[in-house]
Length: 493
Image 1 (cartoon, rainbow, N blue to C red):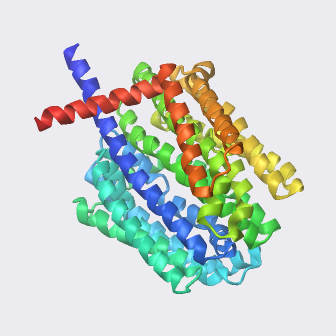
Image 2 (image 1 turned 60 degrees about the vertical axis):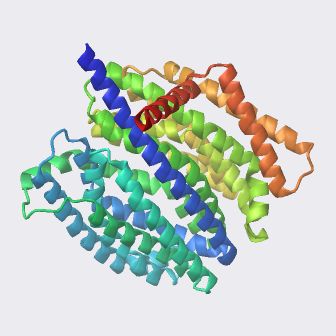
Image 3 (image 1 turned 120 degrees about the horizontal axis):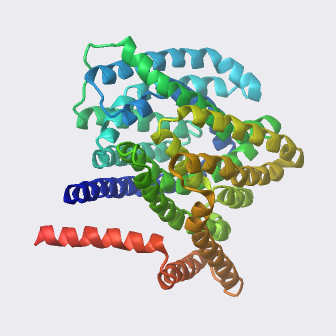
């Protein structure tokens, strides 16, 4: 029994340590990206962001095809050989070059689709990112398997800082949209170089068709799901770009980028760490369920209040930090924040399918959800840009039902149980939002003071209410911090 307890504690410690390092990585990256995006918005037009947004789907598809699910397959395998690593590396590299050729050849057709001749050169230059990224996928998978997120932090942070400095400098010198292009190129190049510097894995000359087939057997279904997800993740940008102007695409893309800096990164911290960690206990359903309950409680505890606070503070933030050109994007951001509330729950429920190796169910589930999304989009697009945004909110909430269905089947984590784990947190977050909005009505403050005071009011209420009600998520976080603090103090002494 003692051995089992020690093993459980060691597993928990490893996962918590991984979460902490990944949290630092994401927080620093969020901060750098947010500051960079806001600075670039002073120099660039909404149209510049719109043109980049139009290409996002093509490059997301290109990266998914280049990966082809091999990185996920490597992370999930219990035992990985040198041959597996090398096979995945050479396959990714070959696919990277082939996909770049395809992008280069398709640039003219992409520009015709959007009726934007400027996209031709943008596609051909940005396409180099796919080749660069093909060199780093196995390195990242290797570090992720080892739960070595400290090293990944040491790679991401300087890459983000350097690429941001270059982008802002280029924008200030009048390079316009090319500052955004080179920010992405430089980030990919510097991070890839650093991964090869800090991680000692190197490919051998081995290549195995058997290994390729095994990994692709698992990864291909995730690839198909990923391609569907990528298309539909960007379908709003595609639709807006096709039906409306590049400027409206820019408003949407900019608002989406701000929203994603919060919801994607914060939920991504846990998703990134828990997938490889929980894959190691994939056959222990009670343990999986216990850990997933804690994950949902902690993630919703953080994400819900952040999203609600951003809805309340969106206008003063935009007024303080951006030119008036960007104010029309405020309602876009507010609606996207509401749509993003359940995103962490989607990620966590789908993660269960991957941990269990049910990539077939993952694919079927994605098809069902995308059919539903298309129907909603076809109806909502008839009501203009805000009809599309409200449709996105509806799609997100409806998608929770099929996403959570298989959690019941696979680990007996029922929907009522999930609701009990996050509804109290969501009610406190919404109450916090109402209090922030109401207090703000009676305080005629400048933008900076408003953000500071109302933000402090919201945070104080939320933390105090969680403490008084003894909410499990806050208690768990305090317990983890206490353990880390005591451990650090003891080791120091």
